[in-house]
Length: 419
Image 1 (cartoon, helix red, strand yellow):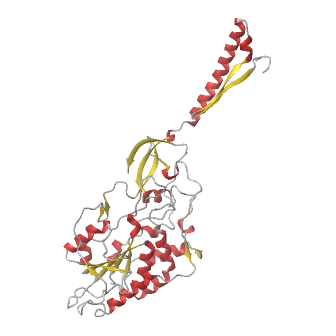
Image 2 (cartoon, rainbow, N blue to C red; image 1 turned 45 degrees about the vertical axis):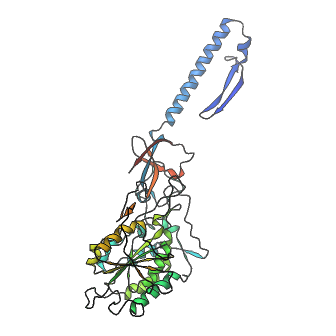
Image 3 (cartoon, rainbow, N blue to C red; image 1 turned 60 degrees about the horizontal axis):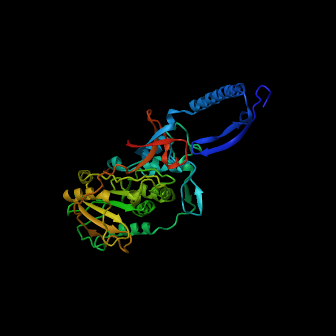
């Protein structure tokens, strides 16, 4: 110390506890001082220096005090968070798992072309086709987080890759066999009164006009459609966006569309304008999800036309296409729709893509009503398809996804809200 401050200090204790970092110091001279004046001088100096330290600490606390530091968890729709803050919301330093070796980059032009390729030729089908998935590759954030995520935004198209050469798919083969069976009704065991599904339902003789509901893993649904799109109009019902931690791997549907685009285009050009619909779904949309897991809940429910709408399109039969089960049972979110179809007089049957001759193995069915958590485009599960986010108390500003908040500077309260 200097002569004006002749007190020598030594450290006695070190404090290193959560929330407390510091040390206690003791003046050596204080131990040996014999006069009151010396003690008085020491205390006066400590008071001055202590005040400076306290003031400095107060300024630091004031500078670091931010109303956004206090946050609360809220559940928000996952798709809306992606649209607002980017497709990788909460995982901007991660990418998609593609699982292929020989891949090539995808151009923005190729993903934009999918919007035209999969827009129904029949304008009557346009209200039922969802563009949600097709919008994701080129979408940019609508908003910015209070504390932007790092690294900065990269569009989904930059993370997509497609195989150098499309590979043969058993689902495409199955679809071709199914269509071939429809073109030969007697061989398919349908009876002489049946006709190919493109014919009008009012044709004399009780003609059948059929709609397909293809409920397969995301890429398989597209592969099946590639084998049937010369007769049926593909109608996309994928109602989510891909995410690096997504429960539903919907990016695989995008990759399949890109890989098979040339064949889809040829079929579109020669397909009748009034071709019947083939509604395409990813069966993973209701995959098991546990709250709090390191996953992004991008699940969705099917949104099918109601019975009256199908009948207005001339549909008399609905065929449910699935895979791998001897007695197919429709997924929970389709059950209410199928019950309504049967009540309206529509013929229902199911087809297994695993069958050697799918059309000949079609099974008529009539669902028995049962309680469900999801149905007719809605869900009764409050947290379904949502993601926990941190919201600033008082302002409601979204601070970020809770996927990444372990060890962050934010302090979350225990209250939960919904939105």
